[in-house]
Image (cartoon, rainbow, N blue to C red; front, side, top):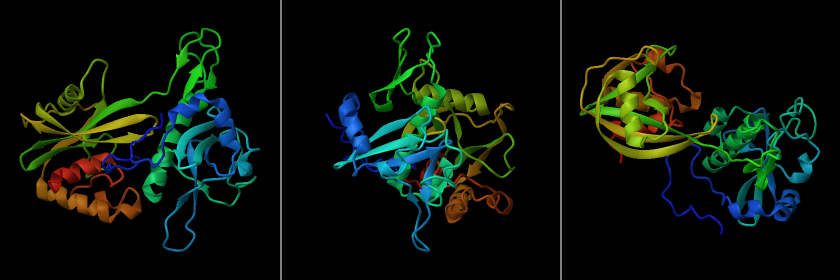
Length: 331
């Protein structure tokens, strides 16, 4: 049965809201996949060194586009460990990603020369339409997984791709391996009109963000939030509420955004995790959010830390959305 997630409310985070039906049932039909891979109506996004092809604006002032290609244009290009991966369908059109990692320099030679650039995924997420960014996040995470899992974790033998890229099977011990997603809690701890933000080791002094950490085995989201906040800052948490999630393909995380109500306020940082942690008043945080959104066109807005008392991450980061939701009491 086909997937249908498009009735859901829009997720505010970059790399969410894919317009594709992942059509998982098609992965079990190699004949259909083979035919779709060659069909004139299908589109393929090339990746090289984990970077998608991005096309320049057609006219000045317009945005970039993902470098979707017809199958015949790139059929002779070399394929990396991920090969050609089925991403899903939209209407009657099938979408694939192709890993070109063995190619020497596809921007400069071969059929893709001069068409665009292979762009780092974070940068691509800031310039592409939201739907394309979501599809490319899926593709990047899958290609990265294949590059890291070419050998069986049970016996060490080379594994083979199956189910259009969504499974690897060991021919020696028959172990099956599937793509993984690592859950990460990312949270804004609050105390009335104040929010707790951390400055990471090696960051500019005025650069602050929300706290975050991986969920450990056997741990609930709420427990992970409370543990991470306490481990990093010594602050205890009394209540945790869910905000939103963000696919984060660096390499394969799901960021679970939460707001945490603090029950203590005295800070004791873990110096292995943070350079400092500070309670900021709402008006200061609100100004920092506005500055970050005004500077979104600058990528990471690197002028911010020098010119403002507080700099927060850009809008593409779920940390920005958590901070903004609290600062402006949205949702």
